[in-house]
Every structure is written in structure tokens, then in C-alpha cells.
Length: 290
Image (cartoon, rainbow, N blue to C red; front, side, top):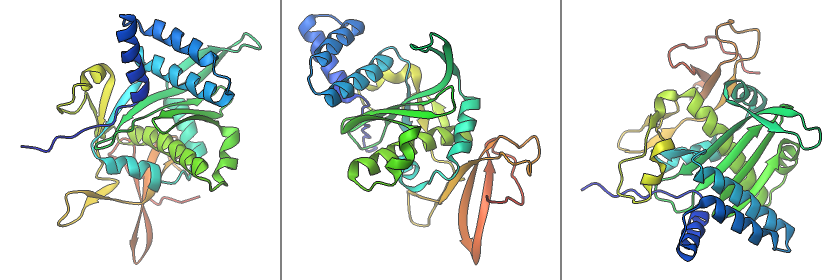
């Protein structure tokens, strides 16, 4: 019999609070739960805790409305790879690509009452053999800047682009973890865009009673052989170092310009770069690193 695989549950504590509320109120109206919880958060005198509760509730409401894409990792190591190994060497290029490829949303500016366009990616992660889930909202604003909202059992927070460079310089645990969370969010979206063959609709076939809730808006995310190899005698992949990059230079042919690629680095007598195109068939030759 195959080993049972358990997955982390994003927004686990919020859903636990909702179920408890349902039993007490004898109701399953998520909007009423949201309003009651907002009133409770309003009464908290600590502004930081109050803001954290607001962020958690707003993400939970999106999840309740099935507006968040749930991603189920095939392997825990893929999450670790996207978070801890891949540097953001071309953040501006990736951001531009995600802005062009994303779905535009409209928000009203409270100060000017004008409608502003932005692109947002709302994603919840299910990681094998872990308890703590992770949910984030990554938005590219109308002015081209980004904003990250995230929630896990171990922390809730937000970061605007204006804070990013300063936080990168810090070495305290909170700052390091925040940069890791941001790196994971950006690399995850880039990975799914660059390797669509690794994306499969639906949830894994596991004995988990909670999975039924996610089947309508879920994908499974596998490991691309372009970022990994299976070493002899091992069942787990070995991930290659590399990074995502957008082809923006006039150096590239017009049909390739603007595409997102994966640049893997290998050592064979000297450093070389292997460049994979997002259409999985074409390759850019004579790649020149910036």
C-alpha cells in the first residue's frame, strides 16, 4: 500500500475559526463570519495585531469566494527550490512579463475616485508532509510597482516595493523570512508560466477529507526535467542552480523578445548557461548574460 501523503492547509487557522463560528451561530454564511470577525478585530487596541487580522480575514474571504488558485506541490523540495535556491536576478524583467501576461483588474482610487488598473495573482500553497500552509496575494500596481500580501500559521504581513531593497539588507529572522516569502511568490508564478507542462488541473488523489473543498480551482505542480535531474540510486531530483529571465534586449529576434526563460547554470570545465524557452521547444543560442 502506498504511503499516505498529507498536505498543508492554507489559512488553516482561519478556516478552523470559521467552522467554530458555524457551530456556535448554526450558520454557514461566510460573509456574516467575515463581518463579525472584522468587528472583533476593530476592538483590538494593538494596531499591528489589528492590521494582521484584517489581512488574514481579507485573504480568507477571497478563499471563501473561490477567488484563490490552490497549488499542490508534487514534491516538497520544489517549494524549497523556488524559495531558497533561485535568486531574483531579473526582478524587473519578471515583473514586466507577469504584468503583460496577467489578467487586469480595476480598483477605484479613494483619493482621486479614478479607476486604476492592476494585475494580481492570488495563490494558496499545499506542501507535502507539512502542516503550515501559505497564502499570498502578489499585485503589480498601475504605476509598475509590486506589493505582496501573505499569510501563514507562523506570520502575516505585507511588503511594498519601496521596502524591498531595505529589507534585503537586514539579517534578522523576520526580514530574512519575508524576503524568502517574496522570492517564493515571484519564482512560483514564473515557474508556472515558464513550464506549463508541469501544471495539471485538479487535486492529488489522496485520502484527505479536506481536499474536496479545493477541487474547483486547484492545480498540481510537478517538477520540470529542465530544472532537475535524477541522480543514480536516488528517487528524488537534484535541482540545478539557475534563474528566470525575460528576454528584453534588441539582441534577440523579435519573435523571442519578451519571453520568459529559465537559465540553468552547469559546470563543465568552465561555467556554461543553458537557456530554455517558455514554449518548451525553442532555444536561444549564443545567450549573453547582462
